[in-house]
Amino acid sequence: MKLGRIHAAVTAGMLVALAATAQESTPEQAAEPATTTTSIPTVQPYSVAPAPDPLATAAAVYATYQSDVTRLEDQKFEDVASIQAALSDLGSQNHDQLSRGWIAYSALIASQDPEFRAAVRDGEAYYGRDFLVRGLQNDVRYARTLHGGSAAVSAALNAGAADAQRLQATAQTVKQQAYSLQSYGWAKGTLGDSGALATRLRADSLVGRTASSDMTTAFRAPDIGNVLSTAGRVGAPSIWRNVSGSADRIRVADVSTITRGTRRSVAPGSEQVADKIATLAAYRVLGSEQTGPAPIQGAMTESQTSGCMNMANLNLQQCIAATHQHFEVPFCLGEHALAEIGSCIAKVSN
Image 1 (cartoon, rainbow, N blue to C red):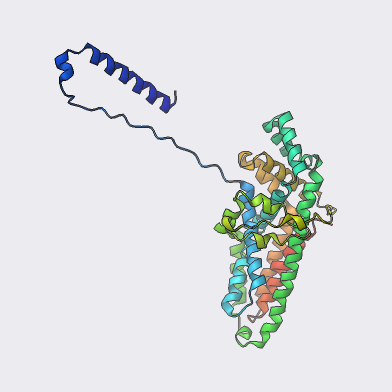
Image 2: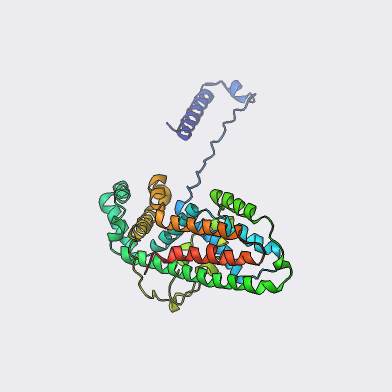
């Protein structure tokens, strides 16, 4: 019997006993004032906070990286400190965490497709939730074969292509600054021990960069799905301009001017990445916070994007090790921490 029921039973029994005693007492006894008072403590109800959604948690890491990119879009390097801050942010990304964050973000977008959502719900109603989860876990290709699965993945690929284009454009802006900074005396100063700096970046990237609290909050916001549904669509502003990092400042684009645009296909050799995006999207529809860590982590882990991003990290570290002056650092950032990461994302789709 639960504690609340035990308490109720004990309380009821005491009240019955007290009433019987009052009826059996003499008038004189009844008139006597009570000498003691029994106080029965009240059992306060409690609630357990819901488990955080692992897909939203992982996507917040990728979103944090994109927020760093937004800052580079909006500001110029004006001193050594601003260059080093950008290097510290972008150079400390862990390739596994970043690739998992990207594929989780892609799955969140795919999960917004209404036909795909309906197909997953139909499968849950027919097979039962647990049986469907086991099926998705055992056959990573299954989710993409569901009605709406191809369209859902295509929406995610469109968003990825938009991000890749953004990274390429920002890379060009940052590399251009590497040339213009040569006219400033402070930018031509000696970098110092560039080998030690590269070694530090390597150590930082092995640990990885924690998702910012702002992006974590934003991706757990109730309205984030409305923003994600417009990601990568023609006529929609960049999602990274709409997600400001605070749940109360998430802006939903005007959908009246937005179209799906070109339906992208999966690039040859990237089928497994697309399959995992669809599988994670199905977990999201079913409630990824209730699915269990093993299926989610298994679907978020893939070698193609992770290996590509790892190579980008290594190239960045080698580039920094070979630099001598401060103005050279932005070139390394643009080439490897931005453009090369964008290429890793772009190669998944045609």
